[in-house]
Amino acid sequence: MKFVNGLIILSLTAACPAAADNYLEDIKNLGYVSGQGLACGAERYPSYELIARAYMVSSARTDAEQAEGMYAYNAAKARAYISKRQDGYLGCNDINRTFNNQKIFKAKLHKNGTIHLPDGKIITPRQKYDPNLLYNRDEDERGRLNAYYDKLIQKKKKRAQKQGIFQKIKQAEAQARNR
Image (cartoon, rainbow, N blue to C red; front, side, top):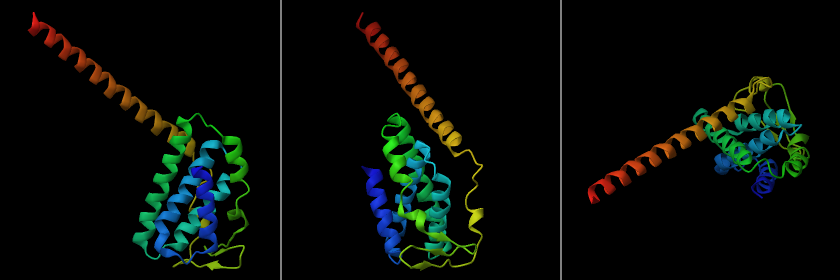
């Protein structure tokens, strides 16, 4: 459901890019959709990632807003990926079908970072840049996020184990006092 809501918001974002007040919320939604696509292995994920990152850079009003947007995007992407992994990749066939048919793929990304939307609107970046530098297609994002997830699970297991040991020690001390 969150994925569908993200796509709806993404469509509204593409239709109304002048809504800069909602920049971070839009970027978080893009990140969430990206994480879902990455987790499910969507075929058009690399193209989505390139266009979404270009939108993030081109829509930011300042460098500080862009940096904040990058953080929000990556955090939402990681949360969505981990969430999808935790639920056992449930519904990935539907997600991939929806993901690969998004309106975002009808946008044209030019070499200077300008984005030409299907409705005729143009998003021009503050400074010209090479959008191909925004996303490294060869990077193993899934491996990195899986390693991060595994590390979090190990920490939780250790914490639970320590708490279990402490519980046993407290119980033994209480029993010893009662004797």
